[in-house]
Image (cartoon, rainbow, N blue to C red; front, side, top):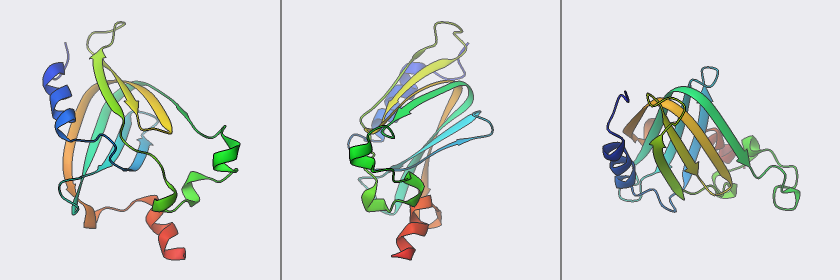
Length: 142
C-alpha cells in the first residue's frame, strides 16, 4: 500500500505552480535512494520548493549531453545560473504496475527527462538564502 494518497500528492505538486519555473538543482543521493528536485518559487522570490523522491527503486534519466551543438562539450557543473535552461514542464504520478507499494514519477524539466520509482514523496518550502546550489560557485568566479 502506498504511504500517501496519489491524487492528493499530485495536487500538492501541482499547487507548487512549477510550470516554466527555473530548476535550481537536481541531486541523486545515497546510491540512488533519494532524488531531490529544487524549483524556483514564482510567488515568493525568497523561497524555493524542494521535492524529495524517497526510497527509490529505480531512477532513469536522459539529458542533453549528446547535443554537441548546444552544449559544445560544456559540463553542467561549470555553468552559471543564466546558462542553465532547465524549466519545469511536467511532473506526473501513477501507481507502479510491478509493485503497487511504489509510485512511478515522470519528471520533465526540459533538457532532462526522468522516470523515478519510489516509495514516498516529500515537498518542502525552504528559504533561498540558506540554500547552496552548485552554480552559485560559478557565479562568483565571473
